[in-house]
Length: 138
Figure 1: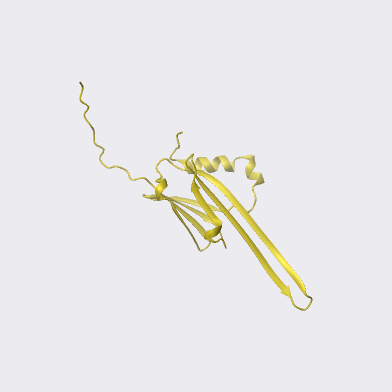
Figure 2: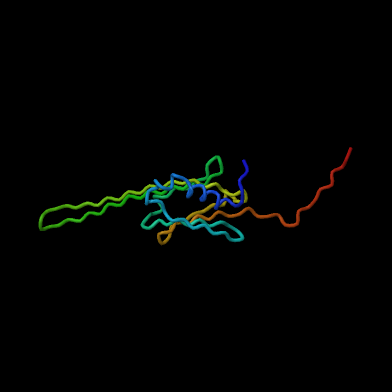
């Protein structure tokens, strides 16, 4: 299967221009993707999410699979009326991203810091000065 190096626009253009976009929950995080010489950096807004609630893996089709699940429960007790109030919040996000051909899947790493899930997708090192090999004819 051929994966284009211009993976980001294609993946998101297809998603954003589909009818599915009209039914997407407001729990989908904002996503930034940037490219450096050595890596692609994916940043997902994940305020209040702990690393225990994040799962990231590469599947057999070379897709980056990201899942974030967050459960928040606020309890507030009013001692004058013996009233117990609860507010529940549950968010679940799962997305697959097609990886570009030049990603070193073995070197992918991630961290959660200041409400941002950052995934670093290192690029494969390019071989400088390709050498040619003479083939002997027998």
